Length: 302
Length: 111
Image 1 (cartoon, each protein chain N blue to C red):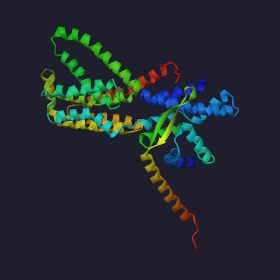
Image 2 (image 1 turned 135 degrees about the horizontal axis):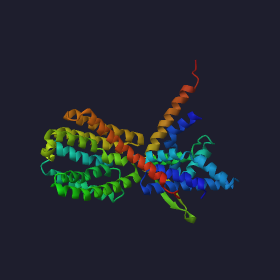
Image 3 (image 1 turned 90 degrees about the vertical axis):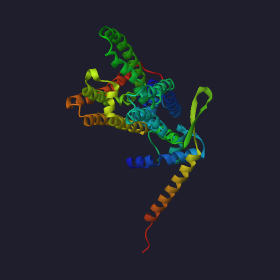
């Protein structure tokens, strides 16, 4: 098929951000439409080149068509919205009931990790990403616990652990970005508030006296921030437009961080600002990476 | 022209449901029918037809089914569903009420 039409369909593919199966169906349908149109134009006496140019013009802007098709597909069901909010609700429950430091954390982590691993291998639906964020929590906690090992052991273990974690995070990030960079934001949503709570609790107990149980001091507030995150994840899944989804991520990340600052009274303004900037950077980097990944790919034949 | 596009935008669902209610159709065929039967009044960027069809499908009003043609080509025919027929009946009644009310206003009043 003519190159200009190939380029048009490739532009659509690059801006669709749908599951591979859905994406292929959309492109096959548009290609069939273009073939019908080209056939008609050639029968009317137009040259191949003229026909392709007119056909692409009649189809309309690739970006607009891709955006509208994305919006037709991007709204999740209420069931998917509930699934996306579930891990946040589990953690809200853990804290609201003050079960965080009393052995219930591993019990809660089992279904979270199992759901994340199971759904990762089954098409990575949008509701998976909040589960994935929490499933990575043991990785972070294990990393923090390494700091408490005897001096010689700590360094050698960290030298092994850090590259392994970086590899795991890069693998997940690249796979998620190939689907849609917004999912990285959905996955990282609890990070600013959780880091904020850890910092606040550590200031209360000091580095040596800090344990996971120290967080129980802020249990109700942590429960409340998790509830806000649960609502945000559900709203994210239900929204159609990308700019609204992005706004939900930014607002809920900053709102929960603000809640940490107000409730704990332990985050100074510079620390709050630094966490907010880090959160915004962590949202922007996947967007930039996605842009680079898309533009570095070889031309595709749809 | 912009006003016509706005009118079209507000009624595209009804138009599409009405056409696929008559018989299952594929995208290009729907576009030709719209253009032909309206004597060129309903003309729009062709690519924007598919978001509307996919939205109706997501709402459970129509169902797209692939049919293979000779030469390995495929076409996606849209079939109306029961929910779509009910929605079309509602929209048609709404449109007829509106049309009647407009006519009553346009009609000159007898002194």
